[in-house]
Structures are given as structure tokens and as C-alpha cells.
Image (tube, rainbow, N blue to C red; front, side, top):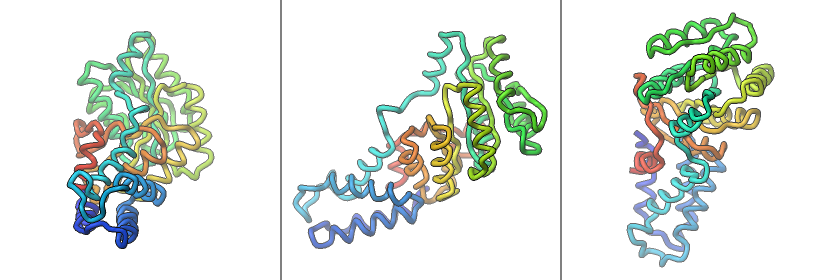
Length: 297
């Protein structure tokens, strides 16, 4: 899946590290990471952690455990794991059910990232775990957005609360929460407009939606194929609204793999799931160890 990065790192790993070539090795490693969509500051931190993991070893006599690739594997896992803030979404929903209040998820992401499909996949996942869901069509800006969402929700058997185009998107979310409380529905997912992150009106609109509906989870959906764009998106949404977690889409088509690393580092929040196919069941819990093995081989 991530063959370009894996092959590059294998070439680096064939070298015997010593005082004279260590600096060159890490320069090459940093550039390899950057070429594979890892943000510059993230690549630099990974290299620093990797250096720290091998400092003190006798140069040229590294065991397999202390080889460059193993040290790098530890560094990447450290970036991705974030044990103090990782959590199970399903467990959190079950906990909220005890309060007789719906668990509210606000979904952020620009158009074309797979946001609507991801919402449908979450609904299917919840349904498989006997968790009821209702979806608020709070993208009242883009022509066809409500219809597109409705088709996906019909496919997975989930009701949509709709407003009129150009109506207040915050009120659509509020109505969905109201309906969920009245009918004992477990989860409310609020879809939002996906205009460009430079659109100030969009950010103000999203802030209002969050303020009015007070979500339990603000979820960013990013496209792994978008390169540096997805990093800019994650940073902008996180700065303006605060991201609690992310889902990365189209991972099965990503030959580089650096986006997940960078998003986790930029937001300091966990990646919950990855999209790995075209179907509604193609949502896989994010496993840092699995990701590292796919990345490095």
C-alpha cells in the first residue's frame, strides 16, 4: 500500500550507521518522509525521536531491535498512539446512553473528502452494534447536498432531518437533537457544509452550529490523497473549532501514507477510523501498529 516510502526506507536501512554517515542518513530519512506527505515539522520530530532511540549504541553493531527501521517504527508509533487521549467511540456512546441523552457528533471536512460516505459508514457501524442514529442535513448551502446525504441514508436505513436550502444550519442540528430526545435515539450526526477553509463565513457558520448544538465529538474527515491540502484543512478546522478526533478516507488508494501521521501530530487528537474501500462496511478502526507495518513493511 505504501510501497514508495517502504522501499525508500529499506534502502536507508541497508546502511551501517556510524558517526560519519549518521547525519547523512537522517537527512535522507527526513526528505523521504517529506516526499511521502509527512509535514516538515512532523518529519523532523520523527527523526529526532528515532535518533534518541538509537543514541548510545555501538555504531555499526546494531541488533535487529535497534536497527534504523525498528527505531523509526517506535518513533512513528509514538506520534500516532497518544495513549492519554485515545478512546473508543462505541464505548463513549454507550456511556452517554446511560444519561438518556443522545451522543452528538459534528462532522467537519471539505467537499470531495468522502465526508457523506463516511457518515453513512458510521451509521452502518452503529446499526451493527444496535445503536440508533439520526442525521441532520446541516449543509444547507451546496445545491444537491441534502439529496446526496438522503440517498446515502436511505441506503443504510437512517432518517434524515432536513431544512430548506439557505436556512439556518444550526437550527437543523437542533431539530435533530430534539427529535432524538423525543424518540430515544442514541446518536445524532450533524453533517456540515464543506466549503473551502479560507471561507470566513463558513467558519463562523460552523462555530455557530457547534455553539448551538454542543456536540460530544467534533470529528474531522480528511482525504489521505489530498497531500498538504488535508494538513492545511485539519489545522484550520482545529484552530477555529477544535477537533476531537479524525477519520482518514481513501487509505486503500494512498501509496504514500504520510497524511495520517501529520494529521495526528497537528491536531494532537486520535485517528478513530480509516476508509479502505467503496462499501458502507469499509470503515476500519485505526490501529497504529497496523499502520506502521503497512508503512514500513
